[in-house]
Length: 343
Image (cartoon, rainbow, N blue to C red; front, side):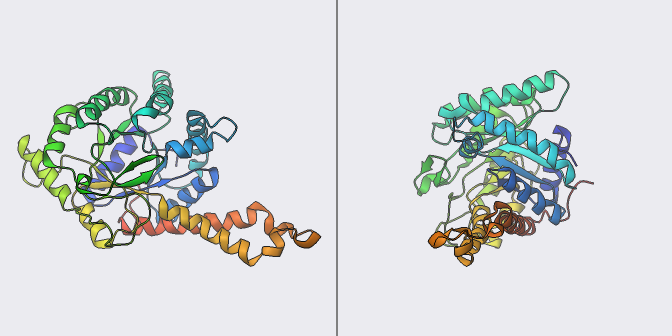
């Protein structure tokens, strides 16, 4: 199937919300990690989301000039071609973009999709993320309003992060403290500024103790039940019926989360969960194993010639792809998206 159209992406999110499951959103940094993500989704018979961070896009742009827009556009165009060979729907998304990188990343990418839509085509990406968590909420939402208007015109969904996620990702870092919990007032102010779909659809990365990077269960206090409080507070404010879930939530910093915490998040409106740290390790682990096991083959030790079959990147690259795909398959199981693809 091709990359999801705007209509299909909206249907994907609606199905996830109604079915109490979420799509893994897999960060990729190369054509090979892209194929690994696509393969994992296909083997799980799950639609999914592939995303590119600012750092990933800079890497994809090549180390000669490190241009983020070039890197993101190049991989997106590649994805539009190769995704047709996988029997699942894939949405393309750009991950965390702070204020100082908007003009060098999200805004130019919005312009690309605006031109495509004007020409009668679909947008290049299906969603973009604005990470204003380092700004005041007032400034964050002012910028979000501008981006949401442009995104809606380009048939794109905006993701917004209104309060901090702990840890560090691509140069954006926050301390692990009590500020990692979004309040009902934060949620109400967000709804007042961005609407509840009437001004354009958006995904909300609310904070419930999330931390980017590697941590063991119990080291961080996750409160996914807080998402229910946020939905209930906004639903009451806007006269929504009991049990309504006005927001489409995103789960950031989920590495090391327990299955119970994930289930609670799904029940409370999470439709997308970012996965990066775990898939990075899954990709690299078999490569390290191959290098250690074939030390004298991948290196020309003591004047020898090595073994071309062991240092050929295709040899260890296939192992890396298979391992990462297996981790994506596992993520689909945890998030209950296995077997839910739109046919």
